[in-house]
Amino acid sequence: MKMPVTLNINNTTWNLDIDANATLLEVLRNNVLNQQSVHRSCEEGECGACTVLMDGKPVNSCLVMAASAQGSTIITSEGLMRGDELHPLMKAFVDELGLQCGFCTPGMVMSAYALINQWEDEELSDMDIRKAIEGNLCRCTGYVNIVNSIRRAKQAKDAGNWW
Image (cartoon, rainbow, N blue to C red; front, side):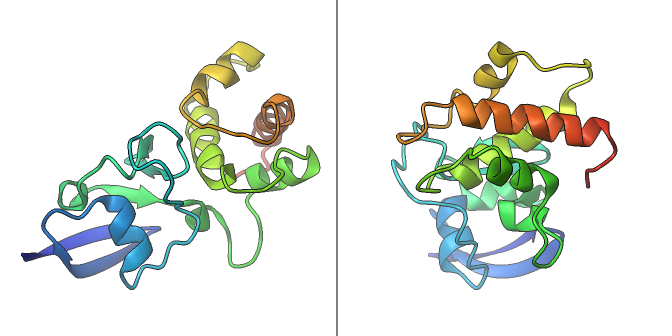
């Protein structure tokens, strides 16, 4: 059964007819939205590859019914970019070698973005960063470079290099 839904994705309003039982992950990837950074993997909320921001908080889009996202603001990693320009957080991942195969990176970036935007203290400890990304599984890096990337991005934000 199809149903109409209005979604705000990356600051664009979309009026869509979706399957009533569709997850946000399915709608983001399969409809006209074509948000390829939102990766399908476990579909159980265990890996974080499908992480997006919903009203500023990281969520596993595989666990969110798309209809329940009506009225919410959804941001994917594509939404952090300015045209072809990488967001400073993404640049930090590149500079600190915080990615290898890249499959987990968009979800990791979204969790890190939420952490950095809500963090008020001067410094992030390794423990703070690791806690924020504990729902994001990376099989390649061992997390050290990811933690360094997030710390570098926080420094960029503190220096005013952020949007």
